[in-house]
Length: 270
Image (cartoon, rainbow, N blue to C red; front, side):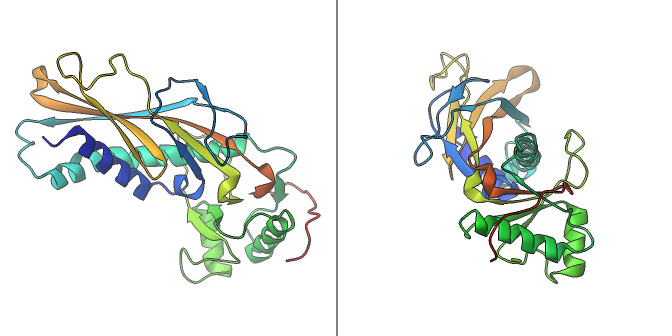
């Protein structure tokens, strides 16, 4: 079997490739261990922001039997690791979206839903963010499939095309989310932070005689813990990936919610 660190880096690359929203927010990671519900500070340049509770733990395990370990490393990553990371990426996206929805406050601008005349509504969102001096770089339009259909019908001809300075990002609602139907947002990247830390285990050692080996994969400001051990009863290697995370709103004025609530914008023209 390959080195445990290689399994971690491969998994993290897939996770970052498959996630849509984690790539659209500020990410903060560290090699310092933490536990579920620990409260940790953000690192620079947001070290003066409020501390973040790591209130979400995601994990996924896989088993590779001895007869399957004869495959190449790339084949095993494709067959075993990729499905785990795709599922974790979906859950991570919904965590970010759910956290944003639950954190909306009076500073958040509410605009009509992206139906009927989405072009006018997105122009309004641009006016709002310009008036609030949100940097024009890395502005994102977070949309569900019905909203994307409206955009393609009325506004853009190519999926993923930048529109009025926003990059459309399609997400797929999952059955375990409490988001209302038609939840869509526009936000600047640095308005939201995703914070990850390696979770503390019972045995923090690389000495296989003292416990199962583990590794911490850190890349692109995201961290993931990897535990590996051999299951004698199954004649298989077991690999477990664990992600400990928290989401915080850094600037609610940089978020626009297309939820149909009537709120008049006082932003300047763009």
